[in-house]
Amino acid sequence: MKVKLLLTILLLGCLTICFGQQDPTWSKWSWLIGEWQGEGNGQPGQGGGTFSFAFDLDQNVLVRKSHSEYPATASKPLIKHDDLMIVSLDSGGNPTQAVYFDNERHTINYSVTYSDQSIILTSAKIANVPVFRLTYTLLNDGMVNTKFELSQDGAVFMTYIEGKSKKVK
Image (tube, rainbow, N blue to C red; front, side, top):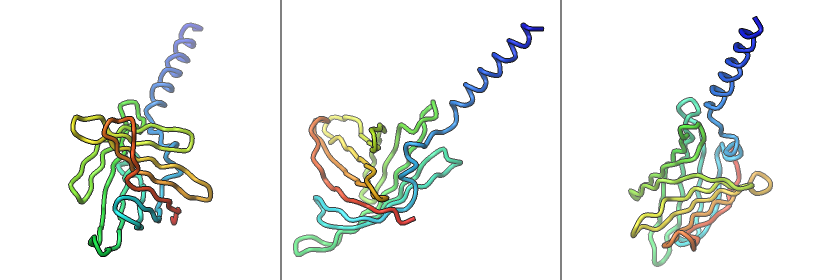
């Protein structure tokens, strides 16, 4: 009787651990869920835009949609940029990968890492293609800093565009 009870407890404990690890964990992204509005500057010029992060597919993916505009200048036409990024779970149920698409026909595959107050998305090093890094950093008062960088060697990054956004919803 004691052996059956012990085996039942061990089996239930094992099932709890195994199935508990399969739940998607988005806790490191929770502060980024919602709608944001911001301004920034960089290579395209001074501009503004919006982005949002929302769950889809029963919280198995996180979808970012972004729109930005850079006003026309004497030397450049109006620039409108739209993109879509899908953050997905790995086989262990962790959000460690993302794929990005934009209206300029770019596709970027990212791996996701984390630091104290930041989510860092970095593309793989591919011959003759820059390495891209997109970083979201939580600031005070419901603000986030977004930085998009490029690197030729994967070690030294140059900021292409950077801006601060405020959560609006």
